[in-house]
Image (tube, rainbow, N blue to C red; front, side, top):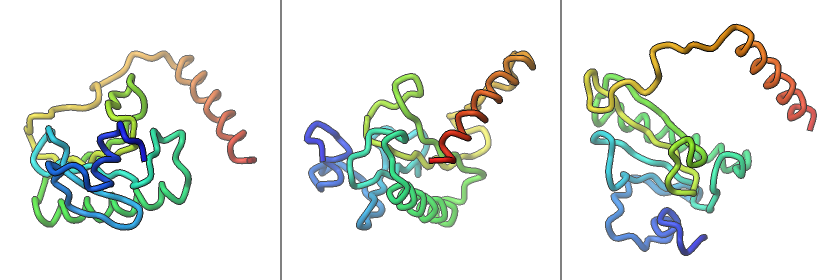
Length: 145
Protein backbone atom coordinates (compact mmCIF):
# COMPACT_ATOMS: atom_id res chain seq x y z
CA UNK A 1 0.00 0.00 0.00
CA UNK A 2 1.07 3.56 -0.67
CA UNK A 3 0.07 6.04 2.01
CA UNK A 4 -0.20 8.90 -0.49
CA UNK A 5 -2.46 6.96 -2.92
CA UNK A 6 -6.18 7.78 -2.70
CA UNK A 7 -7.09 4.36 -4.10
CA UNK A 8 -4.97 2.60 -1.48
CA UNK A 9 -6.95 4.57 1.10
CA UNK A 10 -10.15 3.09 -0.32
CA UNK A 11 -8.61 -0.40 -0.21
CA UNK A 12 -7.71 0.15 3.46
CA UNK A 13 -11.27 1.42 4.21
CA UNK A 14 -9.93 4.86 5.12
CA UNK A 15 -12.09 6.93 2.75
CA UNK A 16 -15.50 7.49 4.34
CA UNK A 17 -16.78 9.13 1.13
CA UNK A 18 -16.10 6.10 -1.09
CA UNK A 19 -19.24 4.64 -2.61
CA UNK A 20 -18.01 1.07 -2.74
CA UNK A 21 -20.16 -1.46 -4.57
CA UNK A 22 -17.98 -4.58 -4.50
CA UNK A 23 -14.97 -6.00 -2.69
CA UNK A 24 -13.23 -9.36 -2.76
CA UNK A 25 -9.78 -10.60 -1.78
CA UNK A 26 -8.12 -9.08 -4.87
CA UNK A 27 -10.20 -6.11 -6.03
CA UNK A 28 -12.46 -3.25 -5.03
CA UNK A 29 -15.12 -1.53 -7.16
CA UNK A 30 -16.47 1.93 -6.35
CA UNK A 31 -17.93 5.08 -7.85
CA UNK A 32 -15.48 7.87 -8.71
CA UNK A 33 -16.11 11.15 -6.88
CA UNK A 34 -16.94 12.83 -10.21
CA UNK A 35 -18.68 10.21 -12.36
CA UNK A 36 -18.91 10.78 -16.11
CA UNK A 37 -22.48 9.42 -15.95
CA UNK A 38 -24.54 7.78 -13.22
CA UNK A 39 -23.34 4.25 -12.64
CA UNK A 40 -19.75 4.98 -13.72
CA UNK A 41 -17.73 2.52 -11.64
CA UNK A 42 -14.02 1.91 -11.20
CA UNK A 43 -12.33 -1.41 -10.49
CA UNK A 44 -8.90 -1.47 -8.84
CA UNK A 45 -6.59 -4.18 -7.60
CA UNK A 46 -6.21 -4.16 -3.83
CA UNK A 47 -2.44 -4.37 -4.28
CA UNK A 48 -0.89 -1.08 -5.41
CA UNK A 49 -0.03 -1.42 -9.10
CA UNK A 50 0.73 1.89 -10.84
CA UNK A 51 -0.15 0.93 -14.42
CA UNK A 52 -0.60 -1.88 -16.93
CA UNK A 53 3.17 -2.20 -17.44
CA UNK A 54 3.55 -3.24 -13.78
CA UNK A 55 0.55 -5.59 -13.80
CA UNK A 56 1.09 -9.33 -13.40
CA UNK A 57 -1.13 -11.92 -15.08
CA UNK A 58 -2.79 -13.10 -11.82
CA UNK A 59 -3.81 -9.58 -10.78
CA UNK A 60 -4.94 -8.82 -14.34
CA UNK A 61 -7.19 -11.88 -14.20
CA UNK A 62 -8.72 -10.73 -10.91
CA UNK A 63 -9.35 -7.21 -12.24
CA UNK A 64 -10.88 -8.64 -15.44
CA UNK A 65 -13.19 -10.96 -13.48
CA UNK A 66 -14.43 -8.12 -11.28
CA UNK A 67 -14.89 -5.94 -14.36
CA UNK A 68 -17.19 -8.61 -15.84
CA UNK A 69 -19.21 -8.82 -12.60
CA UNK A 70 -19.66 -5.04 -12.44
CA UNK A 71 -20.47 -4.74 -16.16
CA UNK A 72 -23.17 -7.38 -15.77
CA UNK A 73 -24.58 -5.66 -12.69
CA UNK A 74 -24.69 -2.33 -14.53
CA UNK A 75 -26.55 -3.96 -17.40
CA UNK A 76 -29.19 -5.41 -15.04
CA UNK A 77 -29.54 -2.44 -12.67
CA UNK A 78 -29.28 0.52 -15.06
CA UNK A 79 -30.17 -0.92 -18.48
CA UNK A 80 -27.76 1.26 -20.50
CA UNK A 81 -27.75 1.40 -24.29
CA UNK A 82 -24.05 0.51 -24.29
CA UNK A 83 -20.92 0.38 -22.15
CA UNK A 84 -17.34 1.65 -22.32
CA UNK A 85 -14.55 -0.12 -20.48
CA UNK A 86 -11.53 2.19 -20.31
CA UNK A 87 -8.13 1.64 -18.75
CA UNK A 88 -5.62 4.50 -19.14
CA UNK A 89 -1.88 4.49 -18.45
CA UNK A 90 0.29 7.56 -17.91
CA UNK A 91 -0.44 11.26 -17.95
CA UNK A 92 -0.65 11.42 -21.76
CA UNK A 93 -3.53 8.92 -21.61
CA UNK A 94 -5.27 10.96 -18.87
CA UNK A 95 -4.36 8.72 -15.91
CA UNK A 96 -4.59 11.04 -12.90
CA UNK A 97 -4.26 8.50 -10.07
CA UNK A 98 -1.20 6.29 -10.44
CA UNK A 99 -2.94 3.14 -9.19
CA UNK A 100 -4.22 0.94 -12.01
CA UNK A 101 -7.95 1.31 -12.47
CA UNK A 102 -10.57 0.27 -14.98
CA UNK A 103 -13.48 2.61 -15.73
CA UNK A 104 -16.77 0.87 -16.46
CA UNK A 105 -18.99 3.53 -17.97
CA UNK A 106 -22.62 2.86 -18.85
CA UNK A 107 -23.62 4.74 -21.99
CA UNK A 108 -26.91 6.05 -23.29
CA UNK A 109 -27.68 7.53 -26.68
CA UNK A 110 -26.93 11.28 -26.57
CA UNK A 111 -25.39 11.17 -23.06
CA UNK A 112 -23.08 13.96 -21.92
CA UNK A 113 -19.90 12.06 -22.82
CA UNK A 114 -20.32 12.07 -26.58
CA UNK A 115 -17.83 10.43 -28.94
CA UNK A 116 -14.59 9.13 -27.44
CA UNK A 117 -12.82 8.37 -30.75
CA UNK A 118 -12.17 10.69 -33.66
CA UNK A 119 -14.44 9.87 -36.62
CA UNK A 120 -11.45 9.26 -38.92
CA UNK A 121 -7.67 9.52 -39.07
CA UNK A 122 -5.27 10.91 -41.64
CA UNK A 123 -2.40 8.41 -41.30
CA UNK A 124 -0.82 7.30 -44.55
CA UNK A 125 -0.72 3.63 -45.49
CA UNK A 126 3.09 3.78 -45.08
CA UNK A 127 2.72 5.07 -41.48
CA UNK A 128 0.22 2.32 -40.69
CA UNK A 129 2.55 -0.29 -42.21
CA UNK A 130 5.53 1.00 -40.21
CA UNK A 131 3.57 0.85 -36.94
CA UNK A 132 2.20 -2.59 -37.86
CA UNK A 133 5.64 -4.03 -38.55
CA UNK A 134 7.19 -2.47 -35.42
CA UNK A 135 4.45 -3.92 -33.21
CA UNK A 136 4.54 -7.34 -34.87
CA UNK A 137 8.29 -7.48 -34.22
CA UNK A 138 7.90 -6.35 -30.60
CA UNK A 139 5.16 -8.94 -29.93
CA UNK A 140 7.39 -11.71 -31.27
CA UNK A 141 9.99 -10.72 -28.66
CA UNK A 142 7.46 -10.95 -25.83
CA UNK A 143 5.97 -14.26 -26.98
CA UNK A 144 9.34 -16.01 -26.76
CA UNK A 145 9.95 -15.03 -23.15
